[in-house]
Image (cartoon, rainbow, N blue to C red; front, side, top):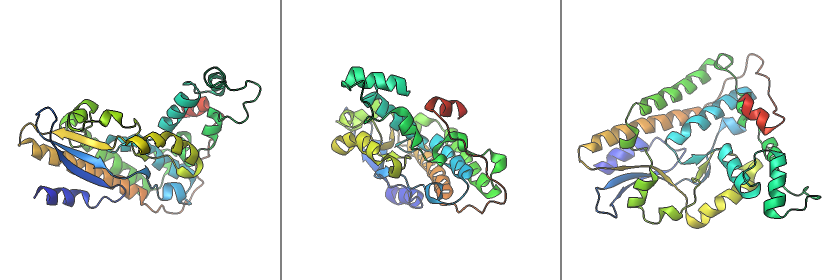
Length: 280
């Protein structure tokens, strides 16, 4: 009965593969129910990545997914990719000058020959326009159908947020997970899913995801100990709301935007990472 009820809720979701696992505590605690993400790599972004809709529409949709999907899915964004690259290659620097210092002082690079080294501005410049928050059209410049899709996603997230997160199906706490999944501390820190497209960032994604491929990813979308059998009703309620949110995200990704009847918003091409951050 439990399995059938779970499948009925999760079956309509096909943008990501999710599995439910009932776990025993290593410390004789109550059982817990975990939501495990079995998908790996880039989330299919549909028309946002590959469509011919105006850039400003695609940027608005992407920005919404980037801001909200982490509430229920183990997913990382471009900023997470940038931060990983910065720590590994540039000693934490976010600008070219600091990155050059990091390459010289920490990696022994030749100060007179840095042409072969990636710098932050070069990484930023590879972003397609729809990944840049400053390019997103304001709501009044979007078609009504797209505004409704975005509003549905926002409303589903707000409904999920009204539940107590710590008692919900989609809440993740590393210490709690460690009690039920011994060895999880050896997993890579990055989650298995990303909103960063592989086409322009294949090399960087391979670099930052290599440890996960070797040691395992932090693939738990939520874990909820059940100290009382009555809590199962609350768990199902939150599972349903999270699934409703994912369906709203799926509907946005599968959306086929109408053709523009007016000029799209101008595309902003930031000249530096600092300018892009300020604009967004």
